[in-house]
Length: 130
Image 1 (cartoon, rainbow, N blue to C red):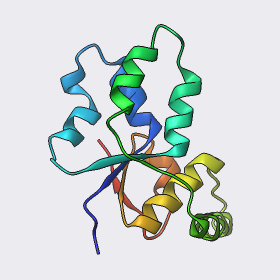
Image 2 (image 1 turned 90 degrees about the horizontal axis):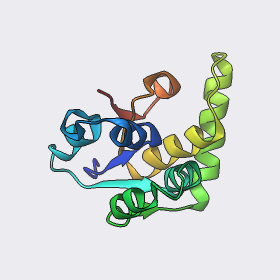
Image 3 (image 1 turned 120 degrees about the vertical axis):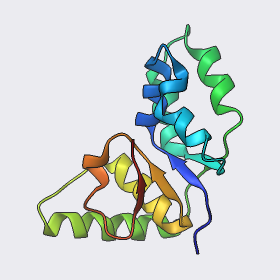
Image 4 (image 1 turned 90 degrees about the vertical axis):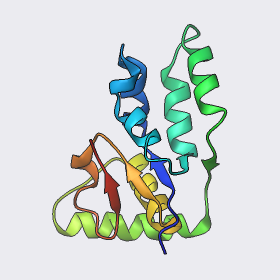
């Protein structure tokens, strides 16, 4: 069952922040799809530890409206299975991306990312890329 939600990866938000013309960003294109969007705790954490005080207003305004999906016990099991799946084909991705992919699979979300390379080998993951 497709929930219709789009889970936003950190790469999408960083791209949006860096663009002078925000309407040309992948994030803006996602918004035009008129589907609900959300984040994981990991994405929220990565954004907030990577910003500085001058950027706080920008990120706080953007992130306060987005629902954040946090840890669910099943995510560990799914992340471990994904890690094993990738290890068998000599591919590895950072822990954060394993949790992001596990969250998308668990909740039946589509994962929006600019970093297709990290996620392209994960079976059962629905990807949305630029």
